[in-house]
Length: 470
Ligand SMILES: Cc1cc2nc3c(=O)[nH]c(=O)nc-3n(C[C@H](O)[C@H](O)[C@H](O)COP(=O)(O)OP(=O)(O)OC[C@H]3O[C@@H](n4cnc5c(N)ncnc54)[C@H](O)[C@@H]3O)c2cc1C
Image (tube, rainbow, N blue to C red; front, side, top):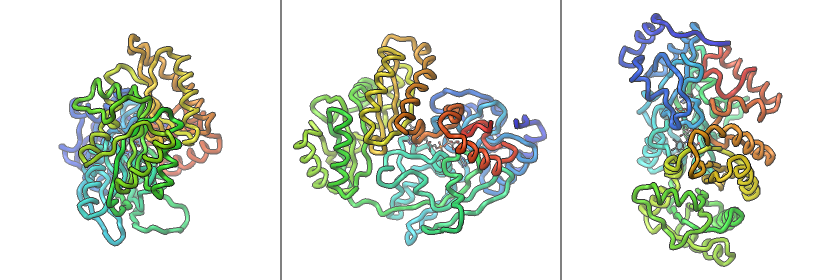
């Protein structure tokens, strides 16, 4: 079922609810909302609506449901699979950024209630101001919003110890496709009263409801955090180093990220004020963070040297140094862009399978695009790699990117052969929509379609994304 295009009467209705200032329909005002970070998708939207209250969201949805207008919820617009921008043309963008402020921390329950328009960085800061800690951490945390983090079930660098966004949500308030409001804003750690509905909205990419408020889990702030940058010879050593670090720190490893030498080369070539913390280059590096003091990490590294898992390492001596180590990791995507075209995969396999996966994936790249340069990096501690491939040095960028589909198909087939996931943390959106038919079984597709049809019978919420209805 397809949706209706907006008309002048619709604009007048929305203006009546929100005021003219918050109904954007000038092309130059809309431009920033229809352009996603990778500039891969461009489609037309007739307007951007910017409600400030839950009841405004409800009124908008009630009207859109009656008129069969398509609505795309949007947070910070940092999503990487085109889920938050129009696909067909004519979808309304519902920007939730004004549902911000009002962050309330409860110290006794170690929880935080907030509107979904707050950025992740604002929520992290509010927790810290109250002497607590919200662990979700992404390179986009200054711009991405809590609603987007929930709807995309964001992962990031602290999943190893604290889990992904799904593990950090206690309750939600959601406006449904027909405008009705579900108040599930509980702060309970235990509630076994039937199906846990909040989990349907977490990771639903805006296809089942508009999340307007959230209650999030907080933690005690770790007393000490230590960061080390280690040189290793191969991914097998990374797997063994993680086991050693977990065993000797009582599972206090908070982050465990892998970076290949080619990634460091790109960073040092293109990054500003970047410093390499070791004296010699190595094939691979691990950025490891422990919620423990320096003695613990020194002890782990001493054992790792003895076992020849690590050839060199630097321990950050202060927060500034730790930040410098992290910058090396965070700018990887950015500097890769300056090396020309990049074909990206966000995959996960069991961590023990990562070394073999990397070998076979490199062979595939060489067969499909000889001399293309794999730059696999990321959250190896979660078995999650951003298996990015940079274009051969002398190749035309477009000619390289034209082979995205063929390469991604083969890499994803390899992932499936390892019983892995072709989207570890970024979601499905537009990018992997067609692949859903191949990666999900008939019974999974059937259940997902039934849920979608039940929650959004007119298919107006982020239509033609995430779950193919036929
Ligand atoms: C530099 C960079 C680094 C990144 N690193 C990571 C990373 O480490 N881990 C990771 O998981 N992601 C990462 N991302 C991707 C992205 O930041 C996350 O997916 C983030 O959670 C998206 O939040 P957002 O507010 O920008 O959402 P948007 O991009 O605006 O939207 C994402 C999805 O959520 C839906 N949505 C947004 N708000 C709501 C709402 N209130 N109700 C219902 N649906 C809603 C949208 O329709 C869309 O489907 C990165 C992105 C960038 C640019």
